[in-house]
Image 1 (cartoon, rainbow, N blue to C red):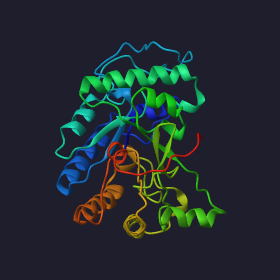
Image 2 (cartoon, helix red, strand yellow):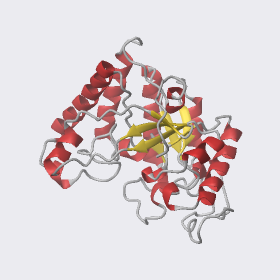
Image 3 (spheres, helix red, strand yellow):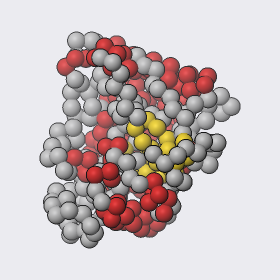
Image 4 (cartoon, helix red, strand yellow):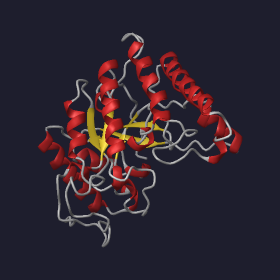
Length: 305
């Protein structure tokens, strides 16, 4: 679950998918944590490091190019709750279930498009902030699937990284089937340069592409289909994908942004799915955070990517 709020698009200049003050996203985070407690389901929450700050002056030292922090308001959590959210981190860490608070970099930087020095600065910043919280960084989800150097992650004590695998398929019909019917593709984790890589789709898979994403409406192509049908289809997609993971023993990595989840249509499906996971016997299905996956898999070591 990616918690990025205003930082997810601070370099793009639009935020129509978010509520104006982040209150809707925080409300659904609360609902998610409550449901996860009820069902006993742990989640890896990757959070943009700047959101851990209570306040700042809008300037941050490091090797970033000029203008990268222009969108930083340089205020505080009360004034600009889309850019500061220490309350969200505290809610995750105070939950009854032992969730993981991992990192989404300090400023939602695109790791594969910047210098090694920038990535170094970002990792040093989040390591310090997480240490202050008593939640050391062990895993990373790089923004927009842009890969950092694995050896640099390992140098900062990060043992697990989530990377996306393109699955565009052949033609629009195949893509439509992938998004709505599935099942979700499965990939074995692999140990690369000292980091366990766990793989996911390039698109959010815990939530449905056919339903509204946060405050944005569903894509036009899906709107002629009754919403109730779309919700049933995604619920079936999630259960079918889980059953396939159980049958094969290959891990299933589902993900979404917090904002994706933050409307009643997506929430209805995800809430039911968490109840389904909670009903599964422990000897049939293990639900793991990224950090715990690092110590629970015999992943093959593969050459440098």
